[in-house]
Image 1 (cartoon, rainbow, N blue to C red):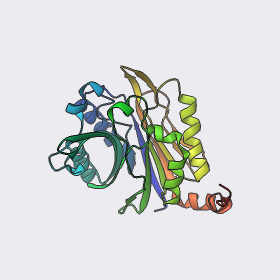
Image 2: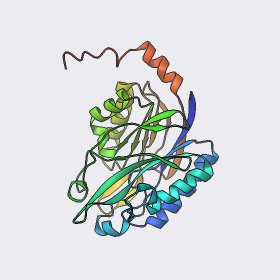
Image 3: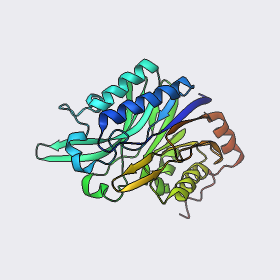
Image 4: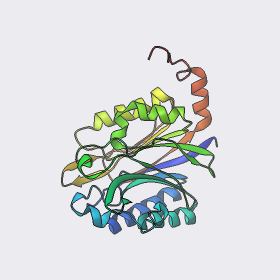
Length: 270
């Protein structure tokens, strides 16, 4: 696929209010699809925020432990099937590792036209996440077969670690996606890091952040769609909205042909 329209849903997440947040997300996503978006990205833990006080009750789980049967994922699968679209984001997950061992994760997902294409559990945990969540154990791109495109998914704090985006790029990702919950006063860092990950890997980057307030943070938004040169294709301010931009994978090939950055690495020296 050469060109594809993508969107970030920059939403205000009401703390611990799953039904309200999911309804809002789907309404905003429907509007983005109506404006031509094929891939729609939601912010980090979009359905609940970091609802630590009620983690057990808001976390996604199922008796079978199959992600496809988590209640919110089931709704997203149905929506994606009806609208023939791709949905990317993250939710809070509860997993029974053993009868006496329960773990919580920040679970990233990619859903394509009604099917779960893949998942990613956040590997770099920030702040209170370290107390409540377990890290993921695998970093690999997710293939979208119907769209003939590969997604490199990372979650918020992962953005600060260039190793993860480089690994995803080298493993064949066509688009880097960051589902974020970056808070004040880090807007400048968010913008610099998002552009840097695109430039240093010569890869388009969808960086989707939230807005609004939570008990412990205020969120500035500034979601971005960036091409493989690091140029902005679309950028939000600090309000609740969605943005749309076009990603051209043929442009990525041309950019890599002009500047052979990945091929010119001196691996024997570092």
